[in-house]
Image (cartoon, rainbow, N blue to C red; front, side):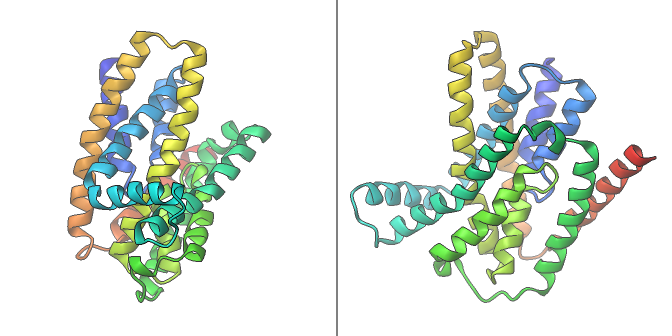
Length: 268
């Protein structure tokens, strides 16, 4: 990739990761335009890790609490508030890991990146987000996030492995479906992205170590991760600031419009 392509990749990932418009779909479309390369997966995960770092920094209080909770779990202290948060985040990641393993074993990755799949998922899951956000009750808050509700959100999150679904969008949809109010639903969705993406990053790190990736690729990956961090930080600041005043409707309109264009191009 050229320097400009790396910059574009990082900006697209950083901006779209936390908006409910599917970063994986946008990255897949970018690779379709630029042409696929052997380094695509490495760079995709690099920009994902950069954006996740922005989440950890932005939600530093919750991230620290989850870290303390993980330490409590390892010590056998399961009843603390921090331990319950860490436990719920880990449980919410299990369906994603299992589904990802099935997709890899069955060799479905390329089929799921098909433009027609992305077009339909952009439309269907965009409308689903709008419908549930508009009509679901807002009676629950973050302290009401039980083990059962974390598992339900984890099952919704597993659908995000299909490009076009949107990890943030589908977990917000799942959170709103069980009655969480919009701000807490969004915050928990962001926190759930941390273990999910770190798990993916760990797998890639093993692959890169086995492949003996060169310093050139590692340098470009670090460059992309840095810009993805900056873009993700800005996107988070904007979305969380206007969350109480702006619904998800503008994102849904964008999703549906993009989905219609993609389907028109593929079927036309």
